[in-house]
Image (cartoon, rainbow, N blue to C red; front, top):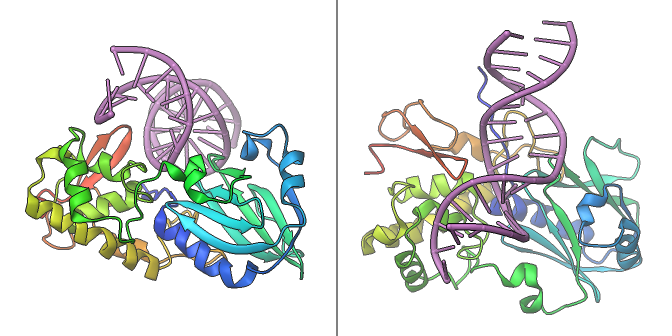
Amino acid sequence: MAELLLQMPELPEAETFRSELEPLVVGKRIERAEITLPRMVRRYSSPGRVEELIRGRRIGSLKRRGKALVFGLDGHPMIIHLGMSGNLFINDASDPLPKHVHAVFSLEGGKQIRFQDQRQFGEIIVEPETDWSRIPDLAKYGPEPLGKDLTLDYLRKGLARRAAPVKAALMDQGFVAGIGNIYSDEILFAAEIRPLRPASSLSGREVERLLQAIPKVLRRAIECRGTSGNDESYVDAFGALGAFQHELMVYQRAGQPCRACGAPIERAVLQKRGVHFCPKCQE
DNA sequence: AGTTGGACCTGACTGC
DNA sequence: TGCAGTCAGGTCCAAC
């Protein structure tokens, strides 16, 4: 049976889209927006309403918050949540349109930004509010794991009052923004902590290891331009595969020998999600 | 308030 | 070969 590697765009994948798109789209005007799947803009009256809001605006900036991308359109920032399977491509208008493209933004000069999302959990949100701290979808996020706000003190206090598994805490976007199923497993391996340990049971030393592991794993994954599966459901903005799947230590490696100690990687289930860990390296 | 479970969705896989 | 059923997962939302 071929191992199916499911894709969830997390912080490294979102950051890859951001850094690849930024030099090509910032400063460009959006001449036309086409939303072909109403579900992508489900909190609005109609796709036409969103198309109207976006049309003619210039992209002043492209930033990332957690797993979300924020296009700084003048006056109306546009947030794209990638959901579980969202990809952002940069293409020429004449390039063939792949399956599952639900939104196309045609830029001056002939390029297009295309939002592809097989599972349709992604969402496009256009906000009237330019102050990020007042945009509800972003305001609820916890600190950026690669920023200064994620401190030892914050982690220690936040984990101490959680009875839930430490993996659940890491994936809680309100606690730390941008970490999902793949990278929580990899981070906890790097920190040598079992994913199902109650968050409040971590020692001070373990919290310190966790604080070090978070940026270490995420930065390396960004260098690799994200994690692609063998079904190629995640590729970068130019359609190229990421490379971090070659460096995964535990995720989707159940039964295979640990790359550090050789012990078979174990799999458990947490809230319907796969949990992968090395029984020897992680205690 | 923290935590849990269902709903949303498609495609790959399983079993008859 | 075909097809119904199952599973997976990020996030929201309702309910303990």
